[in-house]
Length: 254
Image (tube, rainbow, N blue to C red):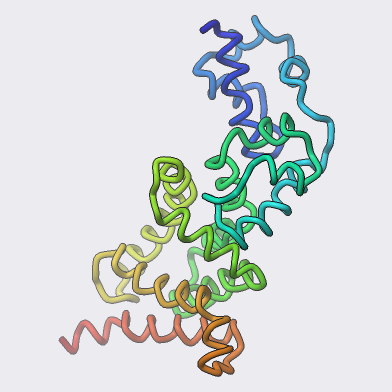
């Protein structure tokens, strides 16, 4: 394959990330230098013209909005990309330029609608705060990010956690950054004596598990078990229970 062909082949996956990709990002995706890119395309706009990218500025948002409804009701596996194009009122060509496949679509949904990005922003901005302040706020942030989209969250959770060949890379990209920040935070808090020492990944699983389970089963708990605790209050209580279990005093008593 020629260098120009490789640029054209890899460019849709760069566009699928959203935003306004730079020449450097297109070049990196093709495994070439910027100078090599400019030998084949005079500018970013020349590449987009060669790709015949649709000028519709809201096409990506329309596709993701339609995908939220469809994935939330039927899951990603059963989703028809052609049906998605019809629901979003975009051409098949536009859809596949934005999202070359279901894995790219899943990544777009995770980026746009999962709690990972809001949690990452909060953790980056407030990483110096003590666990008793930050951890409950992380739980509330996660809850607020997905409130009203439980069906989608359930579908995303099962798709990503399934680790099929189609979703394993998505799971790695989506989760690794946030988990890395969380591991660093709890490790530092353990070293400072604010949290008891356990394996940091186990500590995070014991925090995330109850919060995620509550989010995924809240509707059922409200209808069948008559749960009457407001959502943010519920996840705050779960975070506070985790803090009690992770207290250094618990470690000393043992």
